[in-house]
Length: 358
Image (cartoon, rainbow, N blue to C red; front, side, top):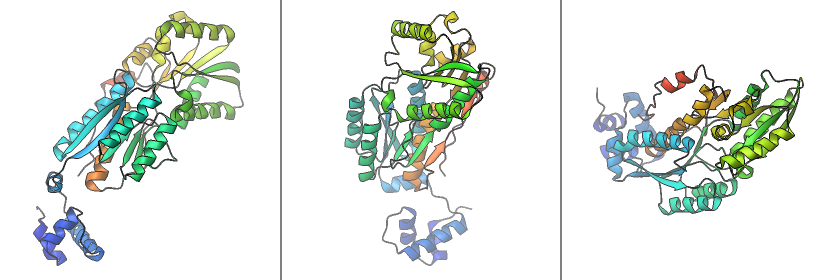
């Protein structure tokens, strides 16, 4: 049976106007009266009509999403998740404005987030790839009381509404365990950051820490870890030349851990025989990575599920702003380990993206 505002008012002993103010959180209601009305609402099983509530506010909920290079396979999947969430919430009066940013340029990040602030959004979705600029942006959002959903990069010291993504430390730890399988007692492994801002990227630093901690705790083998940052990752000849020299200097190389979604760039630049007997662990089920996984040139991919990150980032903001729901501050996604034999399961699986709004 449909519960009417009149039914709530009669049972709570208040006016329908008071019930309306409680439902739409408009204030001017004594705390004890508000508690009484909310108790009756729960007893009667009242559910808010979100469309009507949004119309009652007579405004659109405007969210801002900062997306890095959409041509990058990883970020295009995050954009896809954001679009799924936009379509799912559009009829509630939610609009998502997308701002594009150069992921190699912290100055451009600072400029982009200033544009976001100037647009006066009700909430923001962002991956704070640059530590200094990201911290300052989150501090400003806190001062302006703008809720922020973080994806990709967790900043525990910064105040944000929530973080959706992997535990970067644990993902580095898992990558080390995967490389350790079948490794000789003495070997060299390469931790490769194909990134121009690796030294300032918190998620990459956390992955390296987890990677090193695994081998530090495993005393059964003597593994030398060499960490390298290669900024010119989109220049195949430069990458090929650099890696050729690296291999000459370290002929005992047994494994490579590429810390982000760009493992395919290394494989694209090298001949098949170059990586014989060298295991490779990378991230993300982007099409070029999957091609190398199926060709047995990448041994393991750790799935960060960027589509779900983008989707849940928007949904959490909507739940918080529209429903005033409490949102979990940390929402870790599973560390899915994908190999050639099970990748079709992830590709063909009909992933559902439930709208967590009632």
